Image 1 (cartoon, one colour):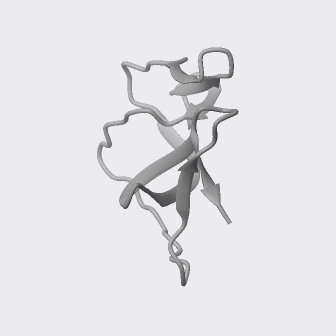
Image 2 (cartoon, rainbow, N blue to C red):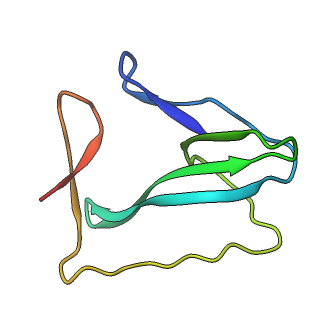
Length: 92
């Protein structure tokens, strides 16, 4: 998991888990950037001790399963680079 550092304009790793965790929440979007799909996801996971940790999902391995429900919009979401933040944001 990571967080967006406004100063560096980069997503930086915040938490790395080398253990099985429970997926508690996963929400985000899949939008086109330069014609290619780009996933932007926020996640909350629970550890065995009951603590919860959240942030931007940077990378994950699923075992044994992860069930997702995707909602498709009639028009595809589009992202364009925002000069102030330095990241691609959805254009509405």
